[in-house]
Length: 592
Image (cartoon, rainbow, N blue to C red; front, side, top):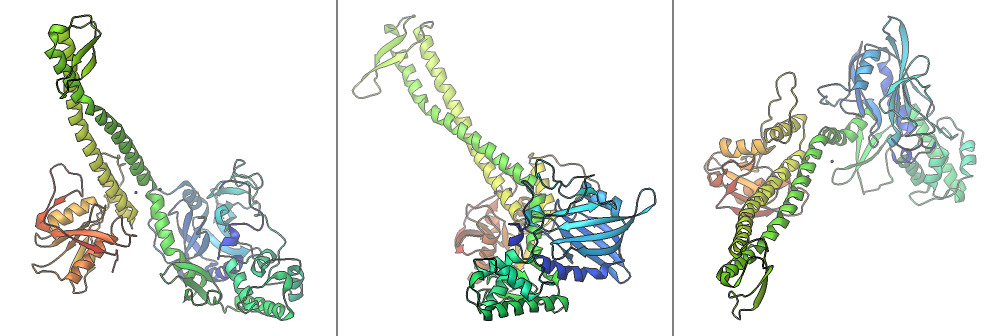
């Protein structure tokens, strides 16, 4: 509440799983060509695997995103505004130094390989004009962004690959740049139909897989579309194509070529009915039938920008929040281990009454015992039938001293039991608090949210904040929603804001809501002194359930009461309150 291995063969497992194939990259390149003769204005590196380059030309400015993330590798124009780290990474600083104000001369693609080369004219430290190349290799988990000098040597890369990571292709400063390995597969933009059918005749198995092995720069979604058209929606095998199917295959491949060459692409996103983006292409996609929802985008870059937007946002936040996740998880594990140990000690304290009874029995029989005895055999008068018990004695002590020794053990156990009970309760309270912070962290949406959580943890002594230049970021206001009747509903973003919202901002007659025994946000339903309707109460409860750890549950219990019944105990951690006179609603989490 978190590149290794040898270089891949030419037909890469990661490559075959990506819709951004060489053909789609060809379309992206065409959209980037108007940037030629533009100059680099700014370079930012929002995350370890992303680069954002702003260009300025005669026709205006544009931003290009380069991503090397395994599941989001791509390059395209972007309109997304990204929060940048306080201090730029080393690779970003190198690019600013070497490429800053550079002029874009060319954008090259070798056939339909998923690699674009951006050639720049730059001025070096001596004032000489040199040509540098920025290569973006889109190859799944082997994706990389490499800066190459005019002699063809690597200056540096976003991901360095040494001999421990690959024995075939090293990517290190000073080494010659080598292109990724590739097979002699056909380029469908150039190959004749006879040539395509001749190569395909040597393949066996499912047609789409055979096409993937035959052509370079094609993705599973594209070859499945070709196979779908070829078989009229029925499965086909490469070794048993009929003449009619061969004609249909050649036609659909030829039509795809025309679409790319004549700029007639239909940039299509298919999503699940729940709105989750599933696939994309530069063709209309018919293979999914009515199972998916289709959306057409105006350009190749606009499609990529929308398709990856939410995924990128969450990935950036997760990367920046990694230190907090590790801190909270380690603190939670440490406290859990401590509670287990204390619980075992507390269980041992359960024997304290036995020590007291032994002391009482020895004291009642002092006349029968002598110094030097190692054992006392006495009748246990605490039991109805007075059974005989054997009590160990210290031979060095007198009988009264032995009795006192057992009394002291009893008193020590009583004290330990009291302290351990308090410590275990505090430990469990601390776990509840950390769980609430972890929940808020999992729901953080901006860099500001992360900074506020860091400040809260520093205030509680869990971490030390580094001194930063400038003013600390202002906390965002509570999230605001409107109920069906126009009533305002406020939702806290973190524990400190929960306290502020509930204890200071809310009116005593407003309604306070919180998930029952589940970490989540405080929710305030403003009533204006009026009694809210059941529907509005349920809408507020749905928000409370959605902004909690139980967001993905089918039904969540939500407690609610008037704000005047909510109190904060002295010394309680942020967000921790007690309340009375509550009622409970069972709702499905929903954000309207």
